[in-house]
Length: 189
Image (cartoon, rainbow, N blue to C red; front, side):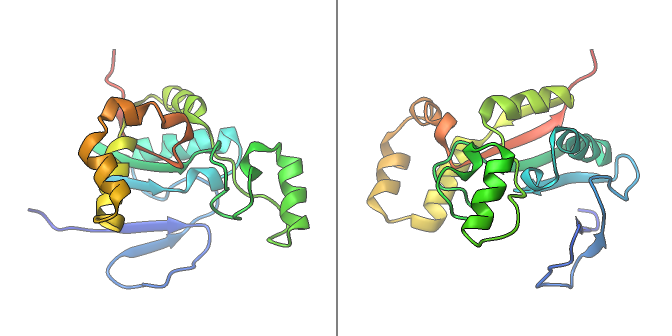
């Protein structure tokens, strides 16, 4: 196995752990790396924070650009249609138009504006399509693994992981709290 290198970027430096990897502060969604730099790229609950549609498209296109030809992108994003919004913990916040969301965040005294733009399952699939990414939905597998790791002996975990088939769990995708995908560039036609 070759040398393992880990690189991270963010628009703010809120790091707790600062050793063992290279960090670069960035502005916007452009990445400071050459084409084909990485075998694996992780974007874990990031895209909802990068801005509007054009920023989200650029974010994914940049991830695709820095990915090696046989690489993979791990992508996770909260579902727009979850009941409790995960960043501000306000019911139905992500369902609202941006201006109403901003007002509700201010009214609740949890910030000055709502800085998230999560998508539902259809919106996310359109985004992948637009960016030329082949998407393998791994949400059900991630749900099962998370239940095992975080609540292994809980009766709900035993029910879900022991008896419910993948197709049944997949019926709940529109209301899953988080979507998880493995992304690769679409093959050239």
